[in-house]
Image (cartoon, rainbow, N blue to C red):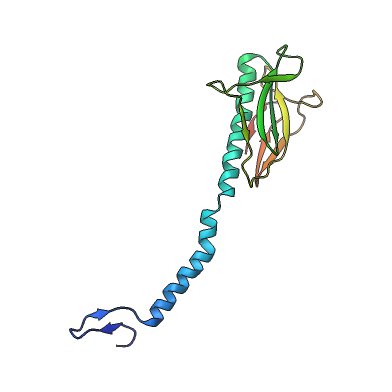
Length: 163
């Protein structure tokens, strides 16, 4: 029978036809060209991880401000993010005291290579309300920061941070 492979002397099939091999290799070639680059692209995963880290930092800044009664600042930029508290008083002065993670390191993170990040600069007061760092005014509208193709939002009044 044609297309069933080659029969040996004892009647068993051995091997594949040329057509079967060409079709199989063509399918593998298409899969390799289309699927593998998407599977091994890490920029999307790096952006998601960085966005999650920034979102956690914003939420931690709010919780820390409420727990300590001291204004706590989150700054996000193209190079990364960091958290600060006021140095001389909990409610006045510059944000020059680095906020430490549990374990003592400064709470900060760097933007991974190949990931774009927008800017966000705000602080939370002792009630957890968000304020604009540059103007010292309470937030009146949703503040956003884009990391890769993900958008993080901080709501006015409540300070709720989400994607």
